[in-house]
Image (cartoon, rainbow, N blue to C red):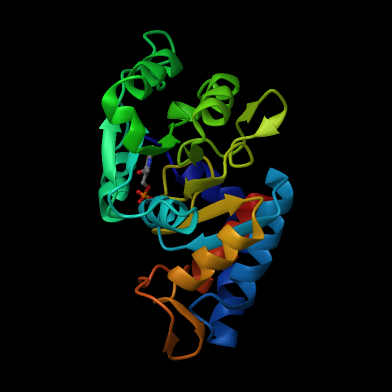
Length: 244
Ligand SMILES: Cc1ncc(COP(=O)(O)O)c(C=O)c1O
């Protein structure tokens, strides 16, 4: 569907240098290239924190878990998205609740979300997870009002929306936490699987960092059950080149 080589050709020497640097350092998991990418990515998005991870799917799960969505709680999302928007909610132990989409943008419809919130099921809902589909932001003004009125968290599925903006604010800087995918066909792409969580909350970022490496804050001391969801050094180095 996409000619990925068109992007690779003008960048190939810079990419080879970046990959060579990781091979020389032999630091393959997280490490300096990932930390440097996280800092640069957070700056570009205008958020306090970015946490690199292994895929967009893991980023969604980490964003939900780190933002404090607990097992048994319900999260409203869209039925018109990639499967991971819903499966990540289940993976976090929460209950996905689907509300319909807008016929013009195909994004989650805030009016339909509010209709769900007004049913008896609405009492279980703790968060809304809109998807910025095809890089077009969901109606964030409406979702922000709903979050204030009903006391809900907002988690962005920004997997398809690197560089998108809603009223001058970047996708990834709108919600309590956001998830990006760097799957090779995405706007910003890795050379394999990679993802990222962005947030303005230091607490959410710290928790995501802990959960992405088996719940460890201190080496081999596991505070809770997390997962192996770390970003490879090679992907961090490649993303650092492409981010520019
Ligand atoms: C909207 C949406 N959410 C989540 C994902 C999952 O990302 P990944 O494939 O990196 O796990 C994707 C991409 O495939 C996506 O398009």
